[in-house]
Image (tube, rainbow, N blue to C red):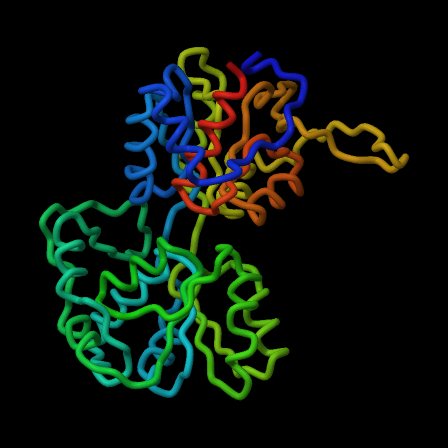
Amino acid sequence: MWGGHSGPPTLTMSQKTDSSTSRLSTNLPLKQIRILVGRARHQASAVSAELRHLGAQVLEIPFIEIRQPRSYQPLDSALKNLADYDWLILTSVNGVEAMWTRMAKLKLDYADVWEWHDFGRAEKQVSRGGHEFVLEPALSERSESKGADTRTNSGAALAAGVRRLRIAAIGPATKNAIEQRGVKVEVVPKKYVAEAVVHSLRRRVKGKRVLLVRAKVARDVIPKELRKEGAHVDVVEAYETVVPKSSRARLLAALKSPRQRPQVITFTSSSTVRNFVALLGGSRAAVRMHPAADGRVAHTSIANPIAIPGRSILTGILTASIGPVTSSTLRELGLGVDIEAREYTIPGLVDAIIACVESMH
């Protein structure tokens, strides 16, 4: 029974084609399901539109706010010396957008560094509905500009030539964001996590200079492991994620309201999990325990409630994770994982939610 289950196992989509079949079996597989989307404001619209298209009732309350780094000096220095690197690694769409925005600001021209992609096609994709990424000191959202041409003088020049800098992207969304700038991506791992990036590059980086552009707070798997392989790795911050304090009152009100209370909450990164807990008051989850088969103590598989002044405010709400790293953080904070995407993308997350809903009918 929805909202009163006794602990369903984590559900995953076994094959991508399964979702196509399931969506054909019903026009609105998520009808009457309330889903809370916690992505940053400028990123929420795409996933929300897809969920609404499938019949879901969507509530958007951002768990993350994107801000500029406290200092641009490390990033600026790296970008001004970009031609000295052999590899560039980007691990998020936010990183891509922040980096290209900064290059435009600095009026950098690297026409002889990048390998060319199909910039003409990419230009059309961006101009039809691209985002203008602007980092301000207290950024809380980014506006979508229809019909805007997001090219810059440096961006057009970057796509014009070929030299030696190779690019690795953590997943398809990051790859697409790069190639929309007209620049080719050489490596995208089969699994969209840091460990897979390392696996894809470990035999190609010995003695090479590697630039990793990322958020202020991130896992150190990539730089640590690539240095073990003999790479010279520089890590620079292009942006930082913070807790949007304005979301706290809205989140608590929604969780307490019979009309707004979600049946599913989506988590698309470890930061969204940590910030979600912070928005609920920062208390650790009240983790229910039971003995495992081998006699050791293990966590239950249900979504465990956060301890909010005398209330189990998350009881009966399912947690939906985009992948294993996010799931690990959910478990670490005692929230449990009810739904996990097999493909670590937004479409994969939507597919997994559909599978869970259909399994309960």
